[in-house]
Amino acid sequence: MKHKNYLSTKSYFINRFGKLSTSFLFYQMQDIAWEHAAVLGFGFDKLKEDQQFWVLSRLRVKIIRRPEWGEDFTLETWSRGADRFYGYRDFYFVDKAGNNIIEATTSWLVLDLKSKKIVQLTNFKNFPTYAESVFGENAKKVRAPKSEDTLQYTPALFTEIDINQHFNSGRYLERIINSYDFGFHEKNDLAEFEVNFLKEGMPSDRLGVKKQFIDENNHICSVVRESDGVDLIRTKMVWRKRI
Image (cartoon, rainbow, N blue to C red; front, side, top):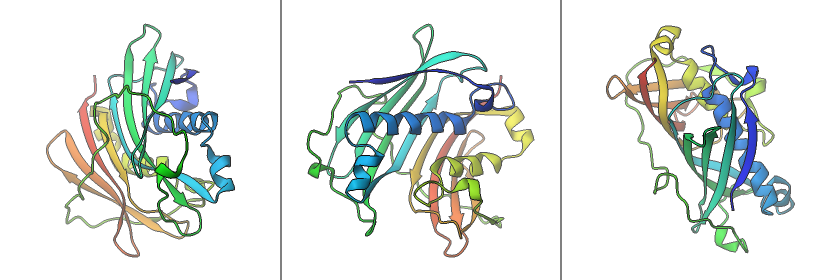
């Protein structure tokens, strides 16, 4: 069964071009996912009782077009079920004419709060399934970028830490987007991105962004922790010329 939110593109959701920003696109997906999980009986509070919590592992988003400031749209989500470890959830952003304008698929894990070990989802009874799949496949593994550029590391900020005391998933995306200068964004718009969330960032971490340009439109990026050089997330980004 699908779960729906009826939304309007608020002024604080938009980028400097007057359209839904990538970070708020992500936050809206994250919010409805938590909401629907609670409706299904697998939400934050329920898992907390068992000393467990959800983490987003993989994400793929295709942006056909972005909602504009003041535009109404519907955000739809549903569970595609689970295998041994991954729970799968897909999304549509639908405009008033009924067109899918943003499409996404996500892969989630449940971790034990103390041991941080992955919990087998086969232990969950009555885990919901729904056959429709946005892309017909799950988000894939993103390889590590290759670059010899010197990275600029900066500390984690107070507003970048979430309720689990980890670096917020959406803030990683903001770090990567902000690593591109104004001139690049003036000419290019993010059309598709795939993300692997690999390690937990902590309040004490200093982070840098590594980029590899496969070609003009296809880039691979990662957020790197200074203390051990580990990639905390990796992203495959597809850019198109801004119209």
